Image (cartoon, rainbow, N blue to C red; front, side, top):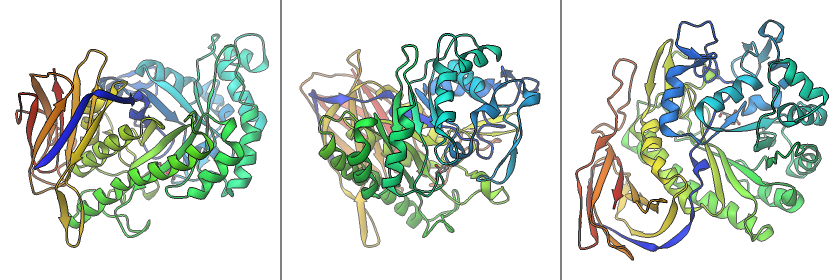
Length: 492
Ligand code: AHR
């Protein structure tokens, strides 16, 4: 029996909607073929952006979208992506498959996409191979309202009004693909570059420094010590990679229960990473002014057989759905410090929420988890205590069930539960204290196969269903969670 106590009158802070952010890079078929087909395409589009993608993403309310990379960001020169298409230079996307990038999707197209989605843009600038001047001019181009060389250039390209830009990253993975820097060196570069990321015309930029790679606690220590006061956010990248190493990450669809267990165990590690990075940040920033931004997370498997290894295209199964939900539960727990997270990546890359093939589109199990969890956006996190049986595999064990609870502005309570065990159902008894609740409804994502997934031919193998396995009696909620399931309950 899983025993849960929810204190409806103990609110632990707001769950920032930006925890449900996405990440879109010029990588494989994320931008080209994913978001962008061009205005002349036969695939229905709005100003070159796929209409089916817009509709699907609006449904899950993605609040913020990070672009243009990733490793691509530190090779990207923004001026190549403005002006008439015929004059935009082509470049080699050296990091991702050596493909030709025609720069048709640039600054204007990205802001149009965000406008169509009702999403905040989060742009990552180039520190690795770009100049301070180039970064400064990009900010001026996007946000300056008045007479200036960059504002005039923007107007010549058809946009008189500046855009609003809040989130700006000063480099990406500068410990790796973004320049292989030491933290001391990057901290100084961050101080220099970020000085010229100006607040023009009433636009205030939330500056995000490149943060650590998973458990590189020294990076966090050095950055906070040497540059903490100059930043608003510090990013963290952590991927769930079940395989032994980066050359053998494991298949997205052909896996055993052992692989399933390892994946869950590795994804649960996010909690430890957030706890330890946060405690380092607390030493320098006890008021928690600087946000921890998990701007790349998700599963990373071997690419689908027969696809370009540089395109990072992988299928998405029930296992990915559990990974997404478990991470959301963890992010909620850390909502005092974690105020944004961006899954990698939105379309056709890594733990995608959408897959496309020509004019076809399919929603992944991960998409459905975003849909089930959107009720938690901007809600107040409630105090929740859980005692779960263990899910044991060979000589290791992890909790069988993880959970989170919140109350929204209308007073509706939502509890989301993950059963990580692929074979055993979980009986839940939840004592809701501090508020009288009488009615429960719910949705569930479940399957009887660990590797169940949606294809272009069978789009609804894994899809949200109504959940009838919960009841409330005298303030006590009971629920029966199917094996390997994600459930969201609404309690009023
Ligand atoms: O998301 C794919 C890549 O992973 C990104 O480009 C990079 O930042 C990270 O290593």
